[in-house]
Length: 289
Image 1 (cartoon, rainbow, N blue to C red):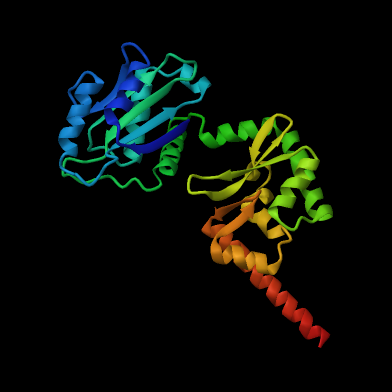
Image 2: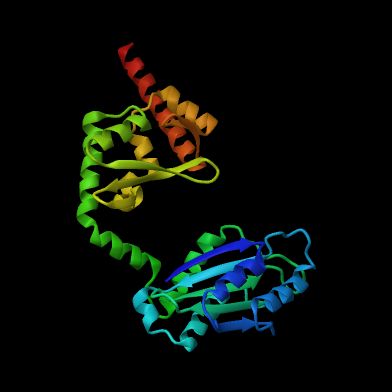
C-alpha cells in the first residue's frame, strides 16, 4: 500500500472533484461531521478553521492506495479499518475527517480529508507530511498483512534485474576507463553507451540525483545500485579540488549549461572530498621534500 499526503487550501474544490469522480461515493470513514456532500462538509471544516487565520493550507489531503491484488479483496469494513489505523498512525484522531473510496478504476484507492485545525484552533504540524504518510501507510499495511510499498518496489526491481546489472556495468566502465572530470562529461560518456542520464531537479532548482533510462526502463540511481546514489557518484567524479570547494561553498553546480543548487548533504560530501584531496596533496609534497 502507498500513502500520499499534503496540506491544501482549496478544500471544497479538491473534495468535490474527488467525491464527484464516482457517483454515490462510498463513505468509509467519518469523524465529527454530519454533512452529506462536499459543500456541507467544507462548511463544517470552515467553522473550525475560522479559529486560526494564520494557517492558509488548513486541510490535510491523503490518498491511500493498496496494490491491485490487495484491493480486489477489500470490503467496506476492511477499508474503514485501514483508514482508522492510518489516522491513528498520523495522530489525527480528534479532528474532523471524511474518507471515501474510489472503485471506478481497477486500482481501488481511498481519499481522506482531515481538518488541519483542531477544536482548540491549533494547526497540525505538516513538516515532512509526504514522507510521514508513506511510513504510516507502510505500518498499516504491515499490521494488516498487506503488501507494503517497499515490497512493491522490490518486486519492480526484481523484474528489471538484468537491466540494472547492465547499467551498473556501463557506469563502472565509464568511471574506471573514461574517468569523467565533471557531471556533464559523465552524462556524455554514459550516453555513448546508450544510457540516458536525466538529472532530477526539484522545485527549488536543487539537484536531487540522477535517473537512468535504458532499454525502455527509467530507474533512480539508488535503485540501480546503492553505489549509484548522487553522493557516491559525486565522490568518484574527478572534479578538481577547486571545483569541489566552489560547489561546497556556493551550494551550486554547473550542469548541462545551467546553474543548479545542490543539497546540503551533497555539498558536505564534496567538502570532505576536497579536504581529503588537499591532505593527500600535502602529504605527497612532503614526501618529495
